[in-house]
Image (tube, rainbow, N blue to C red; front, side, top):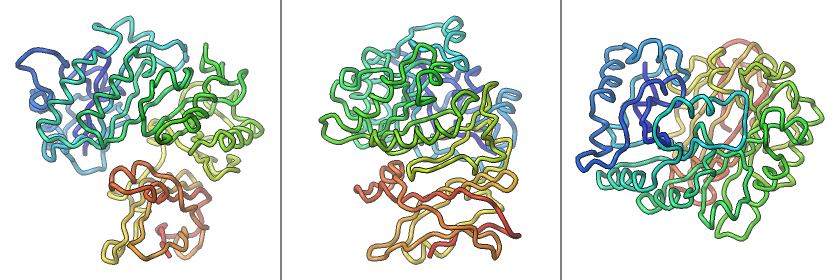
Length: 416
């Protein structure tokens, strides 16, 4: 049993270091501050961080019911502790701001703004100091993730927060999750962001504004277009996040959204299955393979709450999905990142890198002796590119498969 809090850091706009961004927000582990004797690296050894490690080592939940209800609890995974043992932060999650102009019904921002103490915007100098401490201690960070209860781009100094990341960790990817209701060039001020996740739940204003209250869909679409097309040293990886509700899930709008995504020139379009009261009834975890995918850049994603209701496997724990064990011996590198199985529906994704001089001719998906189909190879994976320190070729090592399960026995990803 483990939790990703043994590998990540979550920093709120008011300086809190809570136990992740789900139910763990009820437990604060420390405060980012400017006391001369305070150091973020030393904070990882304080009593609360230590309690997480001790509890999981003993097979116990550190915060009881808080952990039991948390979507980030991984009951079947072996305990990890990269934060201390490896001096590695697999994700530095930063909430730059608690402010936002939108009023999304499922967001807890208004409630948290009324209850939280401290500033609305993360103090740049405190963030800079924390990064300096990590750098001086030779910490490795896999990526920076700007996301929280507020809108990251509402921080008036968001460009300085990006600069802080680049100054101490110049090669670490910066990812920003945004509603995109901004002028791209004005808000970024020429700063490069490796990846944007832009939440636009609907193609038409009439459907979009039912959840993104006060939002402007044309402005959000323009943000994605500009991110790929304005004059800049290099373009970021842009993903459109489309949560499926009862009012934006018609086949016509879903197909039109995929066509629009290709027109915008963006890299990926997620259709997200959610758990909120107005979630789509047409497309759920029971029939997700029936969603009309017509574009090679579109795929289906589920929130952790949805996934926990079904079988979601990782390579370390999956009884149903395995990677070819002889890959490493022949110079191939790769993994199955995820497999979702619900009734007879299956979604598989991962990545594979051939050795120098070799070529991957195809990936077939089998269940027992039954051939299910071929996975799509060549999906852009900026995370793999960054982690493996690859060049541009590393951006297209991903594969995905979506279809129906058939046959008996274990499903096997067969690399030909």
